[in-house]
Image 1 (cartoon, rainbow, N blue to C red):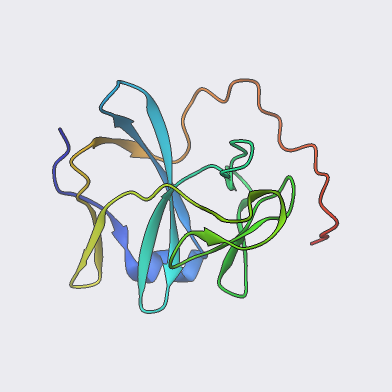
Image 2 (spheres, helix red, strand yellow):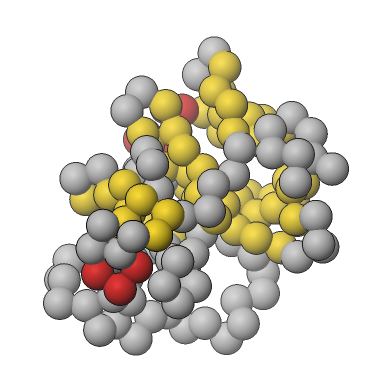
Length: 140
């Protein structure tokens, strides 16, 4: 279903601390994909916490990344940017859903056969999501 599509550059992801784009999956559902810096490259994850499907990246805010971990804005669970694994909080012992990307010559390409690129940014349908009602003890 999917094909090779240039999304952005590695430098842009590292400079901005992350970015998001929207894809359509094999079931016809739109999904947001979070790109985060990982060592010298990038990793791509479905843009939602494994605990309560909370968005990790929000338009106008971005994703909170601390010490190479993406922080869930609702409960404070922290996911390793390179492996997607969480070892703390409400999402402990879970891993973010990955999306296949390839890096060549400093460019990031979507190469996941199960999705099709739609557009940069978050999906237009936010299901009335005005942001998290945080129960986290973390403050930023």
